Image (cartoon, rainbow, N blue to C red; front, top):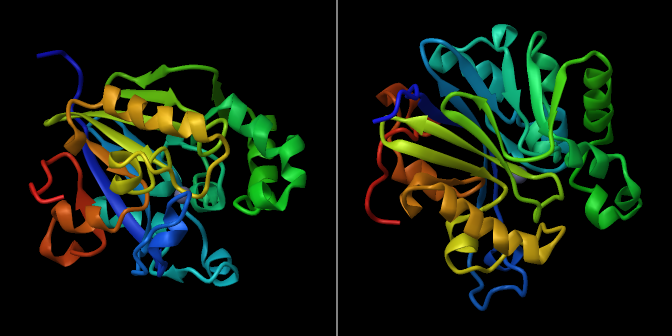
Length: 268
Ligand SMILES: [Zn+2]
């Protein structure tokens, strides 16, 4: 076995919305059935360090976008003994509104981002509503300000953030999308974020409708599989199924927090 640290890995569910199956697959879906979308942040924790992956959105954005806001994800960090005020490392998988909204609640953190993603968020494609609508311009400006404050670390390729934490650019969903691999007691677990919204997008190679580049999105599913010891080591970014597959750390946290460093139930 390697000398790599073994992180505890958590997901916190902070919002949800109803939806239909046809919304979540390019080309639609023959079944007229509901398919909800859950919203998460993820936390990798070892005795030495804590890394937060994505920061969610705030109540005002939830209201504007008609999402059901369940709790502030950063306040909810306290449920697993983490204080946003002291977190030193935050990975941003990409800059869509549901992944970067609370950046200001991490006053001392360094943010880890693929450089391509910021270029995209301030670049020529933002004149198109279809692509721009998934961003909150104030968030993008906020990240630009953080960069001027020397608080963004940019990556141009695959990288190790720390022993046991690796970053993997994929493109597809957005040009600067990255997923995160976390070394845990069950081996490497891949936090896909929006490299795979749902298990079904990946399993059936039917990409999600929120796509920048279809070919790269399909390749991202391959990249996830290549980075994980098994399919059960991949955690999709918005699938309500993960809340039923993985256990809560305690009975009080049921429905709010799950542990991803233990194996899921077999039935997926
Ligand atoms: Zn998302």
